[in-house]
Structure formats: structure tokens, C-alpha cells
Amino acid sequence: MKKAVRLTEGSPGRRILALTGPMSVGMVGMVVFNLVDTWFVGRLGTDALAAMGFTFPVILLQGSISMGLGIGTSAAVSRAFGRDDHEDARRLTTDSLFLSVLIVILFVVLGLLTIDPLFRVMGADGDRLVLVKRYMKIWYLGVPFVVIPMIGNNAIRAAGNTVIPSAIMLTAICVNLVLDPLLIFGIGPFPRMGIAGAALATVFARSTTLVVSLLVLRFRFGLLAAKVSGGARLRDSWNRILSIGLPAAVTQTVMPLSMGVITRIVSDHGATAVAALGVGTRVEMFVLSPIRALAAVLVPFVGQNIGAGRADRVKAGLRFGYRFSLSLGALSFVVLLIAGRSIGRLFDPNPEVVRIASLYMAVVSVGYGAHGIQLISANSFSALGRPYHAAALNLARMFGLYIPMALLGSRLFGLTGVFAGASFSAFIAGGLGALWVMKSLARPLKEDLES
Image (cartoon, rainbow, N blue to C red):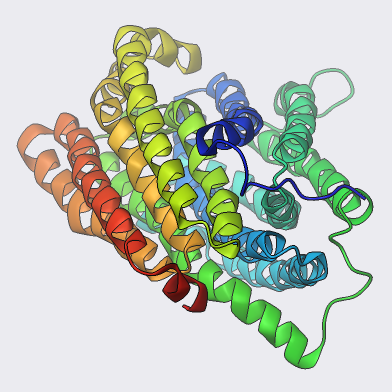
């Protein structure tokens, strides 16, 4: 059985980079997973690509709920490792997986019952709504294969290992890359399924991550018990996970919910605008993957150091993360400003889609560094046991700043105004988040451990 890596020793910057590298590979792989789908579906035409654009907020919502619960699991399990309590870490991991099964059942049932009214509200109609339904009816059935391994992989990261979760994700990407063209275009003995084929390829690919993740948890790390806890022990586990996981889930779902609103605003500018938004947001997820990876690994880093009573290392880790985010954000802006049109043409040759997608990349990327600072601050709040601070920060950014700015910008400057709202809101929220989390760390560490 492999022991946890102690993140309470060594240079904070080097420890974080050592975790961020493999984590970035996994996150880039996740985005490549979506980009491959988008590229192949783009070959079916602009309507199919627009349909994918409508599905993106819902897919992001599911991922955000899973990520929130994963943060709760990672924070609780990493604190147990910080105290050198492996048995508690195993109990928390097992009980969190059982909880994820119950949540998956609820999400799938609600999702299948609300496909038509939800996407009509988002602006999908006619042939695009038909395509959305074909995709989502299959995609919802694959949700268990996404959520359960995501929770398990967060427990592995809490043990200080980001290599194995990334390897698991890369396996799914390879499966998806092979199946996408076969099922979408009907190559060889496979039927031509169109956009539904993309959904089915995703389900098959994700099923591999479920099996491998559970095997690794059980046999390599010893984090999967033979049965879940019962009675008071189960309630204690769920309380510790959900006290952070629920607010973290709210924090994570703010983005897809607001993206649903933004998609509705953009849909007033036509189907090509929605298709371009779908391209732009997927490219954005690719570019931001290293920053998101660093924000994610800060949860186990902060958790283990809080568990060990090392607030000094938490502050050093945050300062390193902020510098990393600003540097990478600046580089991303330069690259997308120069290559935006070329990137857009990879997904759709339609000149209008290319123009709007490149506009999105050029304008929104101005705020990537500040957006990264906000993500780092929010995740750190969760790991510190202050998830409501993280929720407040994200709510303020998306609903207090981004959406009002996008509405105003759309009326005054069209799509340019919508996209500019993303950058302005990122700068304000990023600055606020950095100041707030550093001020919070000035409080006695004991309060964090007891909160």
C-alpha cells in the first residue's frame, strides 16, 4: 500500500509545482476530451456546433457539483493525512463515494425530466433543440461514470499524488479519441449517430475511469473500505465532507449557472454567436488548465498544512500561486491575441463563427491572470474550512459583476461588451479574493481548525 506524500515539508513552491505538473496534464486532457468532441461535431455543421454550445453550461454544472464535492472530500481527507490518521482518511473516502452515488441518482433523474424546458429557456429551438435532446439523453446516463471517479481522484490527490489521476484521465481521452469519429460518422461497422455518437463515445470513455479509479483506491492506496460506515460514523463523515463540499459545490456551480445566462444573452445575437461562444469557452478551459490545476492542488496542500499547524507554509504557497497565475495569464493573452482566428478556424470554417470566437479569446483573455487569482483564493478558503467565503466571492463575481456588466455591455457595445464584462469582473474579484484570503490567514490558526 502506497503512503501519502507529506506536503508539510520542503519548499512550498516546489511542492506545489510538483503536484501542478501532472495535474495540468490531467486537466489539459479533460479539456482536450471536450475539444475533440467539439472538433468532430463541428464537422457536422454550425447547427450541431451551436447545440453543443447550449449543452456546455449543463455539462459544466454537473462537473462543478462533482468538483465541489471533490473539494470537500480532498479537504477532509488531506487534513486526516496531515494528522497521520490513515484510518480516518479511508473512512472519509469510502463514505464520500457512497454519498456521490446518491447524488448521481438525483441529478440523472432531474436532468432527464427537464431537458426540454431547460434548453428552451436557454434559447434552443427548432433543429438545434432536437440535436440537444439527442445528445443529452445519452449524456445523462453516463453521469455516474463522471462523478464517482472524480470524487475518488480527489481522495488520491489528498494523499499528495496527482500523477495517477492524470493517467486515469489520459486513458479516457484515448478511448474517446478513437470512438468519436467511429460513432459520429459511422466508420466501418459502426452506425452514423451524429451528435448522439459524441455523447455515447463520452459515456464509454468515462466508464474506464470509474473502474480504474476504484481499483487504485482499493489496492494501491488502501482508501476504499469493504463497506461504508453506519449510523453516527456515517453522519460524521458526511458532515465533515458536506460542511465544505456543499458551499464549495455552490461556489463551483456559480460559473455554469451564470454561463447559462451568458449563453442566453449571446443567443440574441444568433446561432453563429452561440457556436462561437462554445468554441471560445472550450479553448478558454484549455488555456486555463494549468491555473485551474494549481488552484486544485492548493486544496490538499493547504489541507495538509492546516492539519499540521503550518499557516506560514499556506501563505507562502498562496503567494507563489498568485505570481504563477499572473504570469501565465499574460502569456495566454499574447498567444490568443495573435492566434485567435487560426484557432477558431480549426473548429468551424464559418467566417462569422471565426470572427466572434477570436473576439471572445482576445477580450476575455485579458482577465485570465486575475481570474486565476480568484480561483486560487476560493479553493484556499474551502481548504481553510471557510467555504462560505469562497461561495460569496464567486457569487459576487458572476452575479454581482459579470452578468450585470454583460447585460449592459450587450446593449451598448454588442458582443464586445458582453465579453469585456468577463475581464472587468475578473480583475475586481481577483483583487478582492487575494486581499480577503490573506486577511483571513492573519487570524489564529486554531480558529481555522475548529471552524
